[in-house]
Length: 333
Image 1 (cartoon, one colour):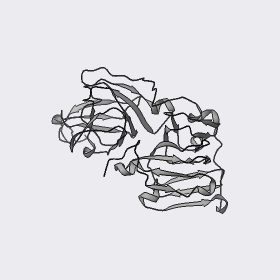
Image 2 (tube, one colour; image 1 turned 180 degrees about the horizontal axis):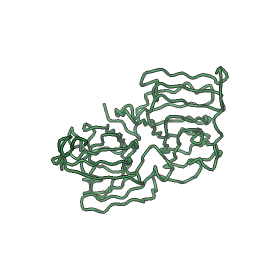
Image 3 (tube, helix red, strand yellow; image 1 turned 45 degrees about the vertical axis):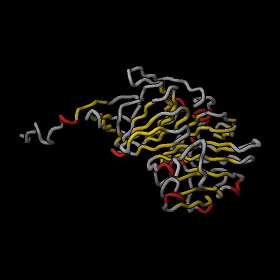
Image 4 (spheres, one colour; image 1 turned 90 degrees about the vertical axis):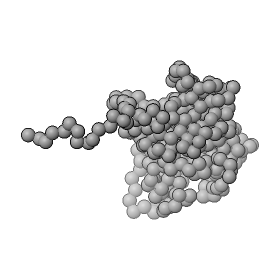
């Protein structure tokens, strides 16, 4: 079976539960196909005339990338048209409320990334409906998933109305994958790249998203593994190469690859071609984190999530210098 591909997707779900509300689409569950556990990635193809169903999650943040067409985005701040390549973030809770519609004549495609934390509660304020899920995306992962009208609740308290000014996705043009704002470059022999921190630019809080432009003959980072965070890579342009515990191979444009937490997720992305390559890397942002570097025998311990700014330490050590737990410890008194 061919690897999942964002530009040549295999649609594996016709989403029917929203048809009564005027939303018609099909979905390619790219993250599921790639073997993701902590991250979700789904390509939604939304049919013309589909309405935007406003909703928000209490447990999971989402990040959107427009792949094709000009969908309509609804948020607490109103409606606006998105352009191809645009990136938008939807934090947890009412201020992350959003809905994607399609007022055009052709189908549009949007790529959604999400956390996969469960249980989750999804609220549809205009339909007066609530979804309770044991696991995020329960229909394909198993577990209980129930949608119910709020009017059947024994007791119900409305969520606080969000301030439209605090809705991150209301700001147009915050970030794009087509003309990115490179704001974190690195110039080191063998490890040179340009980086656009799309998650930070869009106001994401619990998902990391960075677009890397890798020159020929360069890599992003040394061969490494995350022990606390999962990453998902999408090849946007070019032909980068990937090294994993299974070996090395060239990636195709559009290919989607997951790197699970732990040593089995060790990876390195390089560009052995003659033209620049661009890859989008999305990750969970859990802390503390420990990175392993098998080639050099090092580990790096950090009290903050990968790529996050702020206080705390980030230090690297050689594993050969590890000591016994009790070395240097004296009994009290």
